Image: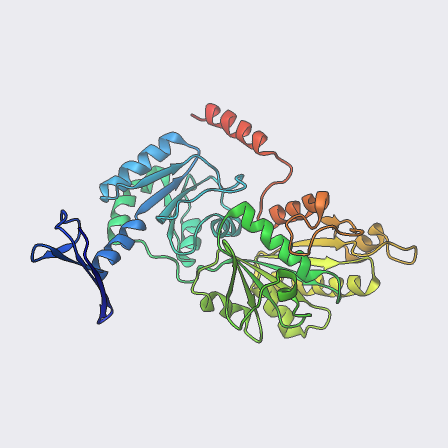
Length: 410
């Protein structure tokens, strides 16, 4: 029978002394009969943490290929293997286990380097390594991946090298960054922060991966009012997989280093109608995807046109792939003196990718997932577009297509 408990802390180690009859030794040091000590063994905990990051995930729709890859992985004395029957080029979301330490992705015959790199950011955690395997027998393609710190193996001639590479150890690419989505408002009071918040929330629901909503320092700084969350100078935890942060004067390139590679997605909220050119170039160079938010005013269209011209010059000079979406936010009733949708598209030389209808007498708070009501589908579509998810194909259609292709090429 227990007669007393004594707790002590010494040199960072917790000691618990319990007067009790001896129990079987299960990771517990037992002393002198009726007294035992529970010692918090840091080495054991570290070993447990290492075991937790033990799984290797294989993503492919080709069963024969997954079986062959699994064989080579097991030869490297890795037993915890998870096979996922999916295609990164068509999947809306891929559920990756928490204990993954590495991912092997089948890219088939796809050779679009920038698309593949973006999809890697979208679908894989930042703290694990990635290996790409595919059917492209090209030294040039392999070299381009190597330059970005990623190993590519040609299935027919190099797959057998997988075991040796695993035994030597695969490095996590040093410049692995979060997938960066910039929402840039072309006019003050246009609803940039609200859309950024709602879009970030949708992305956390779709991807279920750590996401950071970063508010730039050019706007109204009202993110704390929308979220009803007090924010400090550092990262503020908000919801599961959803954190908040003020950008202050930091360069965007510093944010990835600052947050210790925790987040897979960064949503950047920033108005640009009063931004200096060097700031605009900083926003562009750090973005994988840019959403320009405009309304029916000539002011916002003029700012958007200037930005689009700057973006095109940057992409041409730097050969950097950055996707652009134009979002028309109808945040107030349309009057006859405003620009029409066709006028806007003509002036921009760019189509409007999505339009968020005007909401009259919103019934929910700004931070409610249901703030847009039935019109939330527009925000969901925009989120999927920014993530590279095909919104024109349903998940059922995607599955049907994959099944047919598998039968054809089995």
